[in-house]
Amino acid sequence: MLKSVPALTLYLDNSVVGGYFDPEFEKATQRLWALSDSGHCRFVASVVTQQEASLAPPEVVRLFARTFPDKSTLLPLIDRAEELARAYVQAGVLTAKYMDDARHVAIATTHGIGLIVSWNFKHLANYQRESGFNRINLVYGYPSVRIISPPELIYGDEGQNH
Image (cartoon, rainbow, N blue to C red; front, side, top):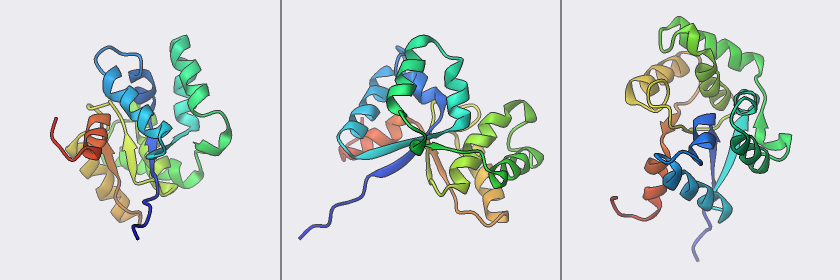
C-alpha cells in the first residue's frame, strides 16, 4: 500500500501573490494556486508579506486576504528571525535597503519552512543569494532553505520538462 505524501508547505513572498495578476507571471502563479486548491501544497506567509500586500493594488489585497484568511498561516517576525535577517545583511547577502527580503528568508528559516517561493530573482530566487543565506543559516545552526520560482515547483509535478 502506498503512503500518502504530505502536502508541501511553501512560504510565499508578496511577489508571488502579485504575480497572480501579472501577465508575465500569471500562468505559472495561477497554476501554483491550483496545486494548493487540490491539496498538493499549503501556503504560509508572514506578517512582513501581509504588510507588503496591504500596499499593493486592490486585487492583490483581496487575493492575499482570501489566501490567508486567518493568522494561522501568517508567521510572526520573532526575535530570532530579526537577528538572522540582520546577520544576512551584515554578511553582505543583501544590503540593509532590502531588509524585508532578508526577513522573508529568516522568518521561513526560523519557523522550519524549507521552501520559499518568489518571483524576486534579484534578491531571493537565485543561486548566489540562496548560497549566501544558507551559509549564514549553517553558522547559526539552521537548516538550508530552497528559494525557487513557481515554475521550478509546478513543472516538477508532471515529471516532464517544459
